Length: 126
Image (tube, rainbow, N blue to C red; front, side, top):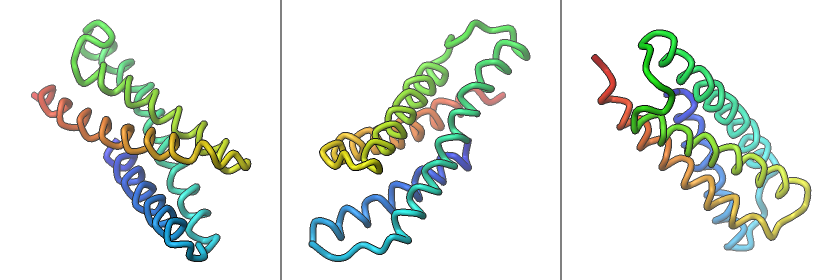
């Protein structure tokens, strides 16, 4: 999950760089966009993989109920936000530029949720 958070932060940084260039009416290199998509896709899949396996190991190893901790509930909300971010990003890539703001907002919220989930996960450590 730490790799997913690092990838999400890198993707966010690249997206903000592209947004800044667009607002300044500068030419954005296509390499930025390709790198943003590559990092975002990897971070999304790693995060969703962890969000799927995390609860299964929680139930299997500890015998606890699903989503019985704050970490689990925040992680589920973050996984949903990350999926929405990916779907919105796909729509933006296909030419629906009016969704750019919603994609950015969902991305920022997903990254913040991932950081909160990281902090709440520290309480679960033995």
